[in-house]
Length: 383
Image (tube, rainbow, N blue to C red; front, side, top):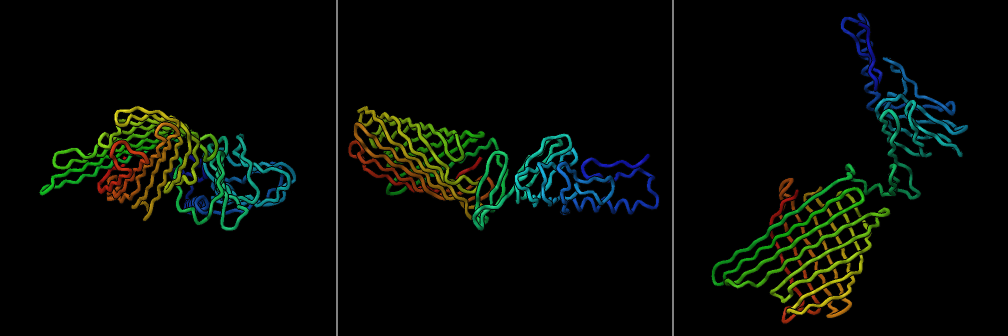
């Protein structure tokens, strides 16, 4: 049985009993082709407007088996460089002089991707078309432009610390529990439960958080605060998004029977990296508040900020979330609350939590205080 050749690298697949006396030469050629596919480099001067990468079964002279391909020469018209129609990837450096012409790269019989002058491209071929990802020069020193079919980002080289897969679907949940218990001259117990979750589906983001706090001193309940927020974001262009926010809150000990709010908003992601983000939004909406058995409604102005930053290679996480609500009618009170803290990972799923929650109401009901500050030490789990 005669030798055959592989489709991707054109390696010679020797049949049993074949190539007596030349087996070692063929094997060495195969190993050299594998080496070229991993770290090989070739420079090719484009000779015509329809050119092809040289291929050769079993030989080390073929061009397309190299991992890095540099294209040079001066284009005389719109030009296409063709490779074999197999599933593979290339690093292509476009060093040609293009003038006003285009330079496409494609598999045989497939669809071409136009290369950018002076740029280095990472190209993946499924055998019928090329999908480009490439780096090009920025107009500023120390920066580069990262390009794909859908987006372009001008970034500092110092900020490129790691690369992660960008997913069309992603989610995460943090669930925290903190509790203190005291017995003696004063019997007291405090329990704080928190949840925050994020769901991303392409251009849609859903955020939710829940906070429940209970405190009891000598058998008497001294705090019973509940708050839940739900937000929907739709990204309509780059970092800009449209938001709809719903919130519900109660604190009967402070004579707040209930507070509900609805707020459409416009937001912007100043940062949205795998290890840090900064989201802000500003909106106007409606609130209904029942306090000390009196119901008031009002139009509102609403401001939100969410900040997150991973430190120590992700083992330590800092977070700060804040919300500001201004009633324009009725009591015209100013309501602000924030959550600020650190999470330290014990293992992949469990972490310690140190947090401060601050609440402020410029016109609290009854004899309630304007400010409420809660410190939480506890543990949590990440899903």
